[in-house]
View 1 (cartoon, chains in turn brown, green):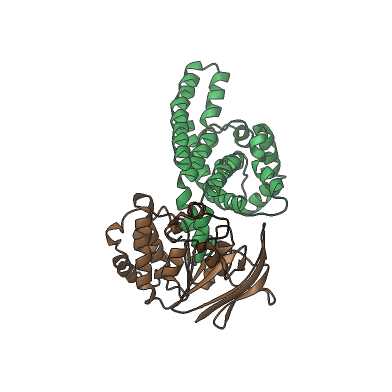
View 2 (tube, chains in turn red, brown):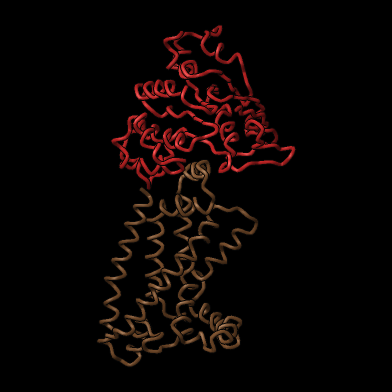
Amino acid sequence: MTISASFRKKLKYFDLDISLSCRSEKMTVMIGPSGGGKTTIIRMLAGLEMPDEGRVAYGDEIWFDSARRVNLAPQKRRLGYVFQDYTLFPHLNFYDNAAFAAVNKKEVDALFELFKISHLRKRKPHQVSGGERQRCAICQALARHPRLLLLDEPFSALDVVTRRGLREELKSMKGTLSCPVIYVTHDINEALFLADEIVPVVDGKIDPGWMQRTITREPGEGVAAKGAREPRLALVY
Amino acid sequence: MDFLALYVTLKLALVATAVLMVLAAPVAYFMAFSRFRGKSFVEALIYLPMALPPTVIGFYLIMLMGPKGFVGRVWETLTGGSLLFTFLGITIASIIYSIPFAVQPMKAAFQKIDPRLLDAASILGLSKMNAFLRVIIPNSLAGIAAAAVLVFLHSIGAFGVLLMVGGSIPGETRVISIAIYEAVETMNYSAAALMALSFIPVSFLFLLLVNKLNEGVRA
């Protein structure tokens, strides 16, 4: 199955105008500077925000079509969405969070095994670390058997070591996912590590040259300045 | 000490609080999350009982629930009885009198919920009603409890509105505040002093509870 979307939306500082697609078992990584419209795009795919115009189709099923006034509610899109910050329900323990919308509650245990959080099933989200919360958020999303998995900078609030570990776990389990995955990041290393396809998004539009420009030195700009601007890439320069 | 009045007071406060919490929760939800033209007009109308003198509220309730009022006539047709000077009458009066004290703190508690949790709920397939029951309510318990305590306190302290709508029928409509007033009127100061004194620790403890609950909400 393929998710294909094209939409336009007027934002405060620029007009978003983008087309992208991703097919089952593949991961499309949207990359670009913060504030470039990546989260808005992913929210529009989820149905949490409405484009001014455009079309989103999942295979033959139309999720949004401005011309035909179709807008499928997020509840009916059957998505997995892991947000940038932890959005587990604070009143529920880990198990109840992951089982919240699970198709088969027995699978939650297997997912907990896979993500190594079985020992935390009775813990509340505020009692565990950020990395463990994000693991549970991924379990919650996968237990729903999503038709499309959206990951919006899921590891950006974590420390480097945890982030690297989770990134590797995600890559190793990518092959077992049968749905399209759209992943948002501003980290080039992460994009190169995970992506089947990379879509650089700058000011609401696809900018194929952005990665090249970012990792190569521009005339008049020193290595130190570049490294200071994007510390994670300092070793590349 | 008029224990019958104490019993009526506590019964009234408990019933009014329980009914009002159920009725006010959807109103508070609507006020917290919906946007519509004339919202501040509706909101001001809901909070009006807070700004009006209790005797004014009592007067309009008599007009409404009396034998010539719309509600009074409907009630009489259905049951053959009167709403005025009954426990049900003062319960309705108490509920209307306390509406703002239920809606305002609940609305504030609902608005403090991280909107991303509601996004997550809709992504996970929850309808608005289910999100309200499974996400909003469990995450606003401290605010809801604070609202309940405020309504309870406001109900046990009501005087003017209850006197106008219910009079002072022992075991039916005579509450502690009216019993104190009558004790003073009949120069029975020792009984009045005892009843008045009993209010202070109860009210203080409940207010302490509200503060603790509000601290919980802020945290």
